[in-house]
Image 1 (spheres, helix red, strand yellow):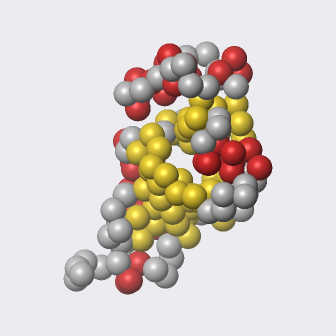
Image 2 (cartoon, rainbow, N blue to C red; image 1 turned 45 degrees about the vertical axis):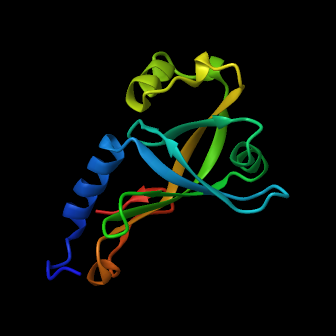
Length: 151
């Protein structure tokens, strides 16, 4: 526990945006197939409005996201967490924007386009974003509601 005062909205937004831009990995929770709820770590690319992730199309996560677009992401340690609820849209390699596949590979250190196993990209658009460090930051943890950043 810390005695630090809770951050205000502007500081939380700055800290959260820095995490989205600089972190490489996140936890992704999905459901939707007969396999039920599933959570995996994945690398991501943040473009300022959405997350790009990639996973084998036939994996539990891939099947879940194709069956039910709802997704929850978590970034950071438990005492400085960002939680994102969003929707996932499948994106084929041919439909990636110019340079997006290269940017993903450079940021994450892996290039799904070079693998034999067919990988599926997913673009995840946030609907709600929350961030907090300690219990004293639970109030005011919402940073985005209904796809609109607060502040």
